[in-house]
Amino acid sequence: MLNIDSLEKGIVLDHIRAGSSMKIYDLLHLANLDCCVAVIKNAKSSKFGKKDIIKIEGTADIDLDVLGYIDHNITVNIIDDGKIIEKKQLVLPKILKNVIKCKNPRCITSVEEEIDHIFRLTDDSNQRYRCVYCEQEYQDKSEGTAG
Image (tube, one colour):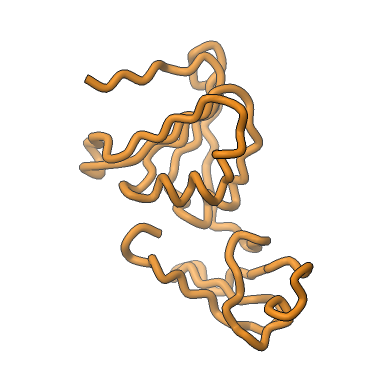
């Protein structure tokens, strides 16, 4: 039997699409945290069949834009004294900075390493982003499978 303790204080990322938790773990740099982080994959979900959950003990600064970009349906629960004190609603971010990279070899970000990779949301319904420097549309290769 799998037993993961409940949190006294921390953050629970719930309703993550099954198979996406490790992408979130990497993009949020959770390996760099000096606290307990639990990744639960393929948990039973009455709504989705399967889901992933990430539990982070203690306080951590989580980039909600990254989560909103990956899946704005993720539930972010802030836990204190063992109870949910806040639920944060995610939205698709209008601007992404250093989350995704421009793949246009002629873009200035490909030449100048110190320049931030900045993308602007150009199509809400299809979740399309374009580079602010060269207008190259970003296409996620994992789109439709985990992203």
